[in-house]
Length: 348
Image (cartoon, one colour):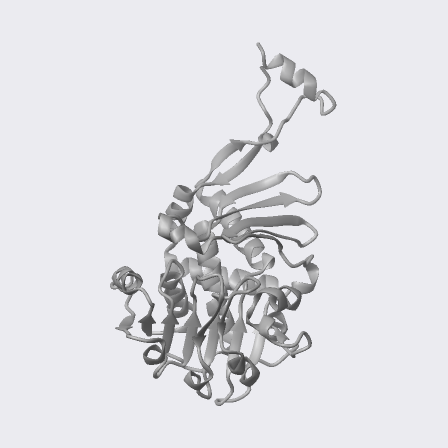
């Protein structure tokens, strides 16, 4: 039987390989690398195909596809969001992603993205803060201490220099978990009894809650001048975290307006409410933070280019480390026109 050509194998990065890769590189180093990779792609924003993600909503959650291409490589991510999974001991978010050559259509990488999405989301948050947060910010409030919280805290430490995190969650066990996981991180951790207490003295406020509903995690009176808000929990229609009045007082920065106006905090505002695209800040086409008193808000819902950047980064790293397995995913007959013959010969 003829051996398949190398093109017939697709590198597959499993959950175990991803964890090995993180420890090989170092978690904080990888977060910094991902932030730099995303910024490099945002700086060439106009070379990418862009479309809002394709979403299938249900009462239980959402399943989404997030595609993009830079003309040479095509990528997509499959991701779900099911807040009710937690009570059954399941992840609220799971994901996998793929890269393919545009020239041939052949896949060149298949990877888990449950862990990688947590990493790239945290890297994206810290990257936005690098451009928008007050200079020399050292203290961050973390409202919501679930699966994303530790990654966010470490990304802000590594990328932005945060040294203190004030933690609050409506479930005390979530805060217990986060504080235990971050105990040896070098961060000063402060357990807080309310969201109001958590934001006291914080220059950056991160909201990362999971409920699929309109919510008011932060009220207008809680946010003072000069704060940077990193709102990442509201990421689908009908799910928000901030009171509308906070939005009207803030300068709002987004990834891709056609998607954010559907899924982000700004779904609460008029369709023509002004926002700034973050890639424009990175290229110098638009201004970010202008004054010490300005309230900046990164209304983050996640966008396909960020996943593309993360997958491309992983592709390069696993090629160097061999942390992947060969997946027999593609049929590769000796004669491309004789797929049936290949099947028939397999009987022997």
